[in-house]
Image: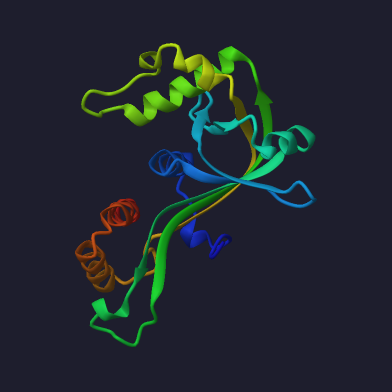
Length: 210
């Protein structure tokens, strides 16, 4: 992952990483190596402790997915999250000698994953995911509306909890740009409709200037 060790692009605190996963919950869960290597795209949720520190990622897998057996054999896995990102064009700048770049927010987590077929754990996970994704929608939907179909759905999934062993996150959001160039880049990205990335860039810039 580019710039992963560059402190200019480090998260300011756990809240940045929590916000990233909440804004972009669909991630890759990766168990590399061996004949049973597994790679699954899935939505993940954050779990924080009483002090607000990020401690785990939660989700669910289909029981028929071979990834479940791999995690039961070897719980070590990685979750890869790519948030808002966009190409940054020198064409937006007065100084056209500059090179193009790519701004982005991303995180890679090393996890120890526990699988659970407990009905209570599965119900909690599915309900929490649906509740978070339906929040704020007109006529928001709830799991209870499935009726008898819920039991068939729940019987086919396994809840997972990935305790976070390590995190590497990169927030490359124009921290090294001169103010004039930064403003021109924001304007170019805004014209291109990259509003979420612009919001992240403005937020980091405001914190830097405070």
